[in-house]
Image 1 (cartoon, helix red, strand yellow):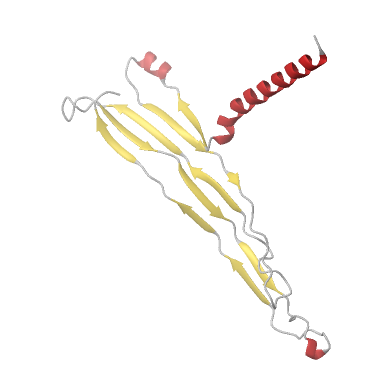
Image 2: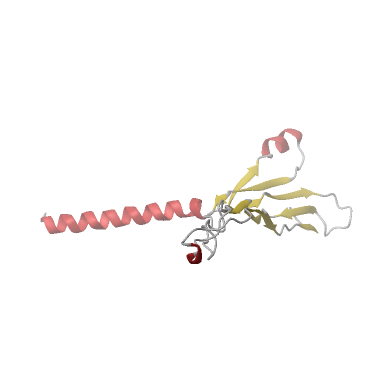
Length: 172
């Protein structure tokens, strides 16, 4: 086998392995929640009765990049000395389906509650301070003047929209 053929074959194998690795890694990296099934099959068999089907979703929190300090004309220190850190994640979700005896008629065999995981965006508190000196003053030979110090706390933020669905229907 020639060296060019071996090089081409090695490059093709490397590309195929990289593509297979990217395909295998993408669902785990792209998933915002991890599904958690609750196995109740053994209990159903031992009690000889139909039990609810329960599954849940646990969100994966992802830290974001904070906004850097902003420099403002006339201030010695940047506007955000301690920046706010954004974190995105979610509220856990649940899906519960339980059998119902025909209480409401023949068309209603189950009761279901579906509360999917919902996104949560947060910002940690931040701090903004300013020094007790002004910028250098050219009229005072470049010396700064004294002023009152300033300090402020940037309030934390929480944003989410939880949803849920309650339903009756045929089948389980």
